[in-house]
Length: 134
Image (cartoon, rainbow, N blue to C red; front, side, top):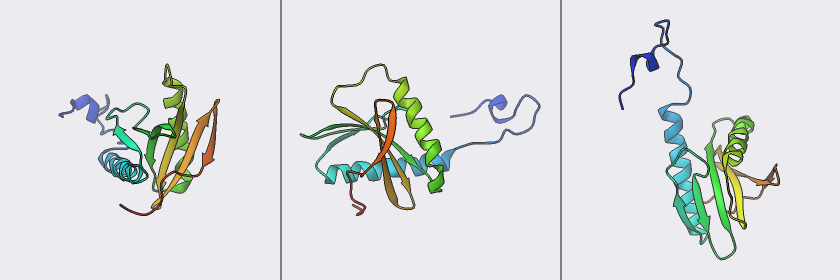
């Protein structure tokens, strides 16, 4: 998609600094694809939403219904920012199914960290997927 010149260059004519970008999207897409495969191996039925809004993945089985935000970070210390975005996504939802678990999975250093939103509080939980690659 072509960008307008004002989007690439600021009003003063200098090139604007990029944040995020293609590499971040590629890394995020890979993390989502990996989580989809791992959830399927754990017996979940999964769907990717293909939206920029929360959630990235919807997964369910006989035991639960999961709404999952997926983040990939190079630095494990960057989890705070990922959780801030997760909190914003959850707060933007207008309705949530009663039995849904709202989760954020952060991929860093080839491992998953999982966090759950419950009653306005985010707590770290054990991931439902194993670290074995599909």
